[in-house]
Every structure is written in structure tokens, then in C-alpha cells.
Length: 242
Ligand SMILES: [Zn+2]
Image 1 (cartoon, rainbow, N blue to C red):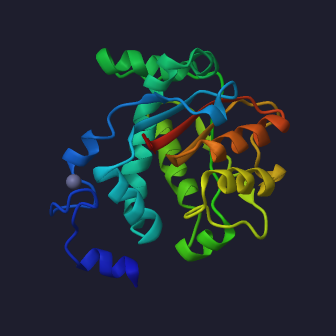
Image 2: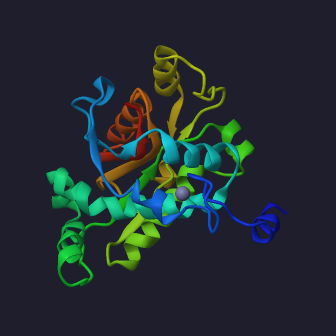
């Protein structure tokens, strides 16, 4: 029903309200960047990067996507993450070494758009949602974004896959409204790994998330994947709080 309504009602940009579509070119331009995010929680674990600061258009889009089920926003968010990956590779040498096809794409931005021939598959592991929010939202919102990012990379010659191996165990509270310490404890205590959903043994992975706040969720994701023998070469989020 919702999908039918989405087709019938005129679409407006979730970032700025402009008519014509769920995400306008002006708001898309705000995600056309990637920056390193410093957090004490993730120091020494993995580089954390985000497309932009959390605020304005991207904040409105993330809230509309997560809390108001504007599912079509998964596409622009996924495409923005995919577009940022070659630049991430330029900032994170381990990622460039593991996924050389990204470096080829970086070259392609200024030269010929020749598809890269990656050695390793780029595995995206979406940060988990709580069971309650998966029910409320009708799915894992970050897995959907990661799926779109992987498809976009595939179309550009980078072999990519999604491994939705992280989940919260029973009884995990949604982190909205929890203070920093509770949030960290929440993330540590309840993060569970679904081994059947992990990528092939030992494959390096990249964690994707919507918003980096304290970094405690990102740190818990990195630790959980490392404990399973997967090097986490970076965490990439749509946005990070200042
Ligand atoms: Zn807009």
C-alpha cells in the first residue's frame, strides 16, 4: 500500500523538500565527499570515515529513511557510499591493497572508465539493527543500503558482496535516547555474529553504518568481526556527528 502511495503522491526531496524526487541533485552533492572521523572508541581498531557531518539535509534524510520508512532513500544513500569507496581507498592504504579495483576506479574518474579487475571481493558488513527496529522498519535498513552500494560497485567492475552477519541479541535496547556509556555497554554486550552470513574465511571486510556518534557501535562491530578472523579495513558511514 505504501509503495502504491509512493507512486501516486508527488515526491519531494527528503533533504530539502524540493519537488521532483526523493533526493535532489543539490542534496546529493552534500554527500559527495569522504572524511576521516576521529573517535576514542575506535582508535587503534580501524579507520572510520563518513561522507559528511550529521546535520541538515542528510540528517533529515536518515531520519526519514529510518523512522518514516521512506525506503526509496536507500538508493541515493547506497550510491553515495559506493561513490565514496575509491576515495576511501586513497585514504586507507590497506583498503587499496585489498581491493585494487577501487584504485582503478579512482583513476577512471579522471581518465577512461575502464572496469577494474579486483583480486578480492569487497565485502560490506552492515551495522546491525535491533530486532525491534527491524520489525518496526520492516527490514534491516543498513543491509538494504549496502545491497545497493554493492550492486553499484558491481556495475563498475568491482566485485562486491553484502554479508549481513552482525545482529543484536535478544533484549537489546534501541540506542536512541541512551547516553554514551549505556550505548557502549549495549553495543558490547549484545552484538552477535551469524557465522552462516560471514564472508569466506579470513576475507577483509568494510563495515557500513548510517551515523557515527560515539563510535561505540562501530568499535563493537570491528571487534566482533576481528574475533571471527576478518580484518576490518575501515568503517564507512553516511554521516558523523561533530
Ligand atoms: Zn534536496
